[in-house]
Amino acid sequence: MAQKPSIPKGSRDFSPVEMARRNYIFNTIREVFALFGYRQIETPAMENLSTLMGKYGEEGDKLLFKILNSGEWLRGLEGKDPGEGSARLTSAVSEKGLRYDLTVPFARFVVQHRGEIQFPFRRFQIQPVWRADRPQKGRYREFYQCDADVVGSGSLYNEVELLQMIDEVFARLRVNVAIKLNNRKVLAGIAEVIGAPDKIVDITVAIDKLDKIGMEAVNAELAERGLSAESIAALAPILAIGGTTQERLAQLGELLKDSETGSLGVRELEFVCARSSELGLRAPLDLDVSLARGLNYYTGCIIEVKALDVEIGSITGGGRYDNLTGVFGMPGVSGVGISFGADRIYDVLNALDLYPDSTQRATTVMFTNFGDKEAAASLRLIKELRGAGVAAELYPDAAKMKKQMAYANALSIPYVAIIGESELQAGTVTLKNMESGEQQTLPASAVVEALKK
Image (cartoon, rainbow, N blue to C red; front, side):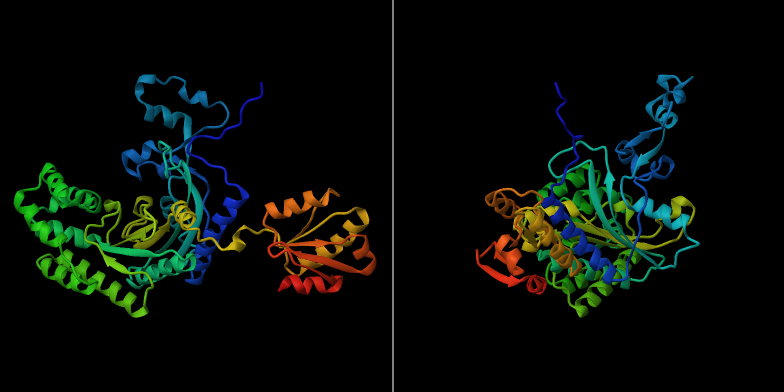
């Protein structure tokens, strides 16, 4: 009995229709990255495990896909005691792993090629990453990331440009979004002024859930995490600030005036918001003091994007980090970056049916096939059309007309060109508009111009 074909859990096949849609997203993002002067790089699917291990925390290390050494990998186990622990055994049989994200390989790239690149270095990368996670709805073991980062500059103009890039991508995709903004220094300042500077991680993990679970549940969690009643009471007015972004920044500045770090964070947010406002973003910019996003990683501005018309998690995120390359022996390189969640954006566009009709069309015109002479005449014209940039194809078999038309219909091909015996003799082509059903007979020499329009 033949084996039933299958693919690993958490991975996917993409049909031509799905690929056309995904490429529409990738091409839109790629065009905007290039428009802002970002240049594309690629890194290998696999990295040395020494590059990846220890960069994502203990949990992240467990989610790395490790690759067995080629050849006689069992030799690595000779003389090893299975009781030594899985980490020791893994290092004996595996030296490489699939990349977990694009950020750590990017840091490795910057350090390895530092003599060849110009700083500030603006790069973008659109490639798949792999995580040995438990597959579930919306969570895959293989998925794409679309990252843009600028490293080697601490200027806040980089943040302003990244916000414009986000705005431009979603305007082109016609998705209504809200851009949420916060600053790691503001979070540190909040912990300081409520008298719990050592509890910053506990505070941010709890307040990050404010939207989902509400203030009471957040306060209960803070108490569980060891915060005093006084600290919890001091936090409440900070989380309750309201009004416009400018008004909220003014209130936040007042509340954090005794914290040097917090005040600096507020000034950074004021700068980014003011410059963005002057340039005019289409998407609303929303200051959210509860936004934390993988806190230990970021050191300045934090960005998160939510779709307004679909219930889904964050579809883009990012922020400022001050020591990306330090783990590879090149300390003090500041950077800021964003990552578009292509798979979630794909789900949003599907839910709202926002793909242009042209996305699905690979072919503009299909020529029918009535036999060798007619096919030869068609191929000459197809060559001309392709030379003029019009996608054209010949139905390869001289099948019944009904079957050929059904094929064109199924693939949403907008035009069918017919060269039968009478057209061959007259030097004409019958062109059928598949949407309206209208037919017109044209001289063969006029077909290219007609279809270019």
